[in-house]
Amino acid sequence: MTAASAHLRRIGAVAGIAGGAYLTLLNNSSIAASDHGGAQPALADVRQQIGDPFANVPPRSVQESALIGSTAFNPLDILVIGGGATGCGVALDGATRGLRVGLVEREDFGSGTSSRSTKLIHGGVRYLEKAVFNLDYGQLKLVFHALEERKQVIDNAPHLCNALPCMTPCFSWFEVVYYWIGLKMYDLVAGRRLLHLSRYYSVQESVELFPTLAKKGKDRNLKGTVIYYDGQMNDSRLNVSLACTAALAGAAVLNHAEVISFLKDESTGRITGARIRNNLTGKEFDAYAKVVVNAAGPFCDSVRRMANKEAKQMISPSSGVHIILPDYYSPEGMGLIVPKTKDGRVIFMLPWLGRTVAGTTDSNTSITMLPEPHEDEIEFILDAISDYLNVKVRRMDVLSAWSGIRPLAMDPSAKNTESISRDHVVCEDFPGLVTITGGKWTTYRSMAEDAVDAAIKSGDLAPGRKCSTQNLQLIGANGWDPASFTVLAQQYVRMKRSYGGKIVPGVMDSAAAKHLSHAYGTYAERIAAIAQHVRTRAWENG
Image 1 (tube, rainbow, N blue to C red):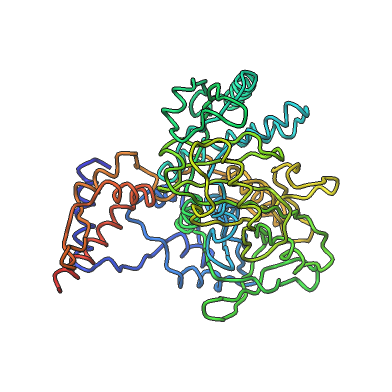
Image 2 (cartoon, rainbow, N blue to C red):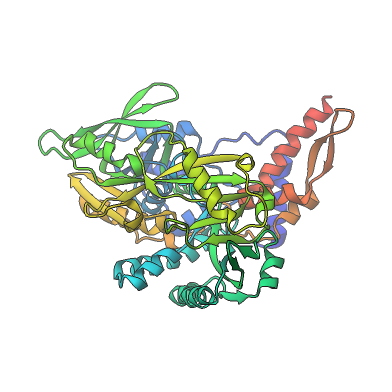
């Protein structure tokens, strides 16, 4: 598409919105074909649909109808339980292979663990250290794999992800050498997927980059820092983007829909679908599928026990607490890593949406719907970062806190969850039910690939093509670049309240334009146009 034609499409779209025509319903050919067992579109058509900033995600009624339309004689290929990163990744992977896929999520997409992360896409510096000192090839393999996936996640959603420098303070020359060598190894392991080279910075350079960094600690002086790069993401929006992209690729995804029981073949005992309750209406319906994929995160054991009450526990839940602090705790565009706390953990302090996020803890916990951070965990984080800052760290500065439950695959011989590998596990311990658990955000794509591979084997499915998610940009990513916000700032207005209390049109400031651009990618112009139209009409009507 030429620049001129793209501009004409933009003008036409905004004109349509201004005329009140923006409530057009989508007719998504992929879901329509799936609903009737028709032929799936070619991969090129799917990519075009996903990359089109004027495509619409099917409304909820269409998604639900596609699930209800499945029957015992015309089932879905895969029904996914869980709308977190892994579940939505499975739905996207399956749909882009040409399979008929449905997904249900009890709450909202990304409402659980997937939105309660450290916001990092990383290989795991700590895991590399363990791999070297424990001669643990499994940990090293995990780091290799995660670093490869890290770059891919950033490339597939550049508006939601970015490279972030992280500063490692060194209070002895031994630490300077130790961390410099360790982080150079991290660079080496990343290979061609390297974001930027790590390097040493003097005390003066470090303080200029991170003004709140303490030059002196308890009986020690700062000798400099080693800065390396990892990825940062907007985890909840990335999760929702996965769900929307899967829907555009032809999957039927439905939130606030809970699996309450399984359907089984009476003669073989194999699971053939699920009884689902729409938690918004209370309505129940059956959805049939050749294979059910259990991607329920920390709740995957409860899903497995729906199939077999005697199923052994395979989840070792770990609590990860984070806190939000004011922006002055960390400069924009630079993170800080506390390499070793009093009990040997790692704490990150990172800039996040105009604030600072600090965490995380790693401790045993029970599985609950809404885990809450404990006061001792909040105090632990505050105490850990206080030794590295020249500002007074106060409990009253904590603006918010949250706890997420990591679904770690349990090793019965492990004494604590911190020592368990974050690698994932795929198993089928009941016919027709494939469970995917463990792993971490960074590797969601490859986890989904492994789960779909297992589902294909379990259900003897016939995908139209191989996995293509490695180089598949998500909704809003195609054509986006960091300067995209300038179009919003120059071409749209932002309605503001005047001193007299009236709503008047004003300039779209850079902060608002950047927020929209990074949150919605190439869809940002549609958001700005809708807001401008609605606000302008309200202004005109007094």
